[in-house]
Amino acid sequence: MTEIEENLFDEFWKIYNRAAAEGFEQSGVPLPAGEGLGSEASFFRGNAVFAAFKVHRMQNDMAALLLDENGDLKPFEQWLKDVSPIASHQCRSWLRTEYDTAVLRARQAADWQQFRREKDILPNLRWMPSTSIHPGADHKVFWGVVRPVDDPFWDAHRPGDRWNCKCFLSSTDDPATELPDIPDESLAENGPHAGLDNNPCKDGRLFSDTHPYIAGAYKGAKKAVERFVKQLEEKDKYEPDRKFGERLQISTAADKTELKENIRAAKVLLSSFTDMTVKIRPHILVHGRKNPEYEIDGFIADRKGIESEKGIASAFKKAIGQGCEIVVIDIDAKMQRLNVRRLAGHIYWRKRDFENGTIKACYVISAGKSVKIDKAADTKEKIMKILEKLKP
Image (cartoon, rainbow, N blue to C red):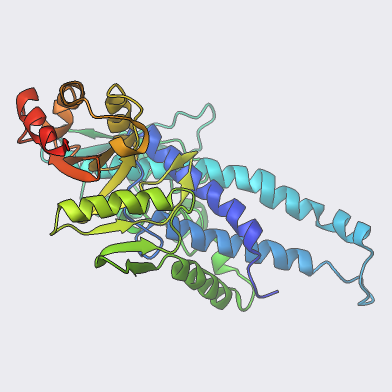
């Protein structure tokens, strides 16, 4: 069998994407938005490749059991019995291990991003002991090792390069320690486990090409996966709007249930800001949460339709949780009228989000017009003055 079974792929892909999102959330960092399927460094693309190889292996393992020893097609009931161990391993025990390990590695990737941001203050990393009740002996030699964040040591050794490893790293300003006597890595038992010898923070992949699904794939698997992933990427194309042209680009995989409203709001923004560009992004659901709908001038953004001014706090928090740097407050979506004073007060209460750079800008849409609020509007009165422009 050469073609990837799409329904099975979709289920595995969702699970791995959910693991990535969960790992980042455990670290307190949103899964990096803006890295779509077309990016080589994308977690989604890495998960897509891994899921496709897994499906190819599973379906071909099952297909190999279709015939009996005489070359005759087995009765369906017999074949179903013969393939049940494969289904059990691939969809239960192995999948559980893959999920748990993916969560751990995604969390470590998120932590690594934080380590890089803080390295001027906390320049070193300490290898912390495993939290497992029964930790493996292979990593004990590294417990307590302190090395600089950018030390080549971390390219060859790091928590997460063993299945279900529960060691972790902690940033510190303590001085670096000497390296321990490192076991002979030419021996398989001393090196990273197959599929876990990469650094997910650097290549955006939770599993590497040395995993048996990939390294030990059936003949033709690589071409089948490349063809399948290319088809996925083609679904992720953008088409220019007829009126606004390249200024408004709409993904062919955009959320159809909200596309009409997203286009309406985008056109209001573009009419109000003539040098703006907007992309309506592909719809991907991870960990029960929608990915942001817009990319505005290169920044990730989401449209929030609030029912009252009190919804501002929730809208900002949800947007930040999605990794957005811009939030679009769509008054026209659900509210009957604009109360400038109340809305200004609630936006002003989000002052810290602007000051610390978490939110670059807030666009407010009302009565077919839009205004922009950023950190320069640092008083309630300034925000009110901007919002007054939305009045008919």
